[in-house]
Image (cartoon, rainbow, N blue to C red; front, side):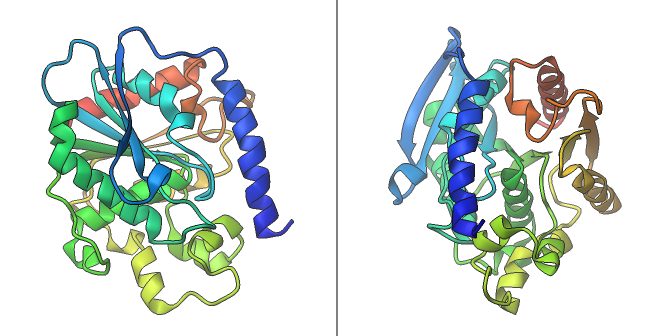
Length: 296
């Protein structure tokens, strides 16, 4: 299949699978929603939702979810029930859209995350967001984006390579879920069409300036936020957990690594945590939120 055919296949078949996963789910009775808030100039791609428990009257520690989907697929709607489930654990939860490939290319998604957090810096208090107690989470491609953007926020020299101003926020922790974190290795292998399409280098060498913007791992410092790094026994990206844990530990960053499920639990696989009907997802999400509460 061509890259374009692969993108169409993902957008078609993953949407079917996600709809089946969430079949029968509705907004929980105790959750208040603020839907389709515009944070930037790119229409539906720059909308976000915010979820809080009813009765909340003050700012809370805030989780910002960056969805996965191979940099080409996904939306806040696909993650709404997962995010509301997290909100039931005592957080304000922000669930964002961002620009996707192939219609947009790096650094569009990173710019959008920055713009969304700028919106939260300026207007988040109206929706019970605490800009000084923020947590970023993301799975798969979203995990890569979280690891990348958290490096931008915590390393001013790396941030200077981008044409945007980082908002006045504080990242207290991150959740890295089933992700691909090492741009250098992905570029050198050249085997991930979705990543290479995201950076617009399917048919060309990666320019040095672009590589320098992409290689977050080498620019992580001791100031990277405490990290909950997780995957599953049947996740095809499981091999990224241990190297990321070793890297952050070597920098002195507080972090935990968790691998869920067994080889026999085939359904506990890539991005399983979004399937809130499954007990292993509940265990993962409980343990991650307990980790976050240590730092907010």
